[in-house]
Image (cartoon, rainbow, N blue to C red; front, side, top):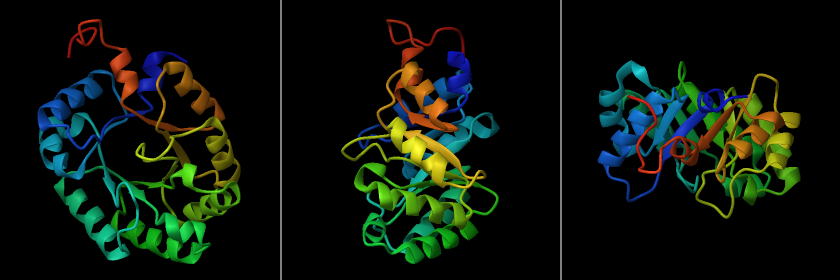
Length: 224
């Protein structure tokens, strides 16, 4: 698998709280240059990023991020509003407290409401694997599959750790064949990325792979 193949599976990500739009815009240009799957950015930047990129790049943003404990009505509103602003893909964080307390029905109901609100758009569900015992992760995988979401996603990148190969292997074993997997957080090399893909990941969330394609001066190799 080439670096270019891997980048096509990558949601190039800038979710730092201190990132100005000038930095977002530059990273959108890099994501377009390297044919990334999408640019994943904070909700406040969706409208301007979509104006900048148009149909040349999918815009991905986050809902209930990073803690997941917003109420359902807020998450539904966020998702609808951000699609109106120009988002093509929504990554929503589950209520992690519900998960660890076995409230799988509540999680499924919430996800079904968000799925209805995002019909026709890509929906990814972040489950924050580092906070879930393996037995809980296995049950949550089944819930996400039943909800009709397009992807299950390992991590926000804001918790104690990001994705592991083991996380992805569990997800692939427990999710329906139709449910795709996004590995995110801690993917710092093309070797890491390829290991996640071999374990079953269909999409990668990282800020680092595109940076590895820059020369020593921080300039993209090739032309925009």
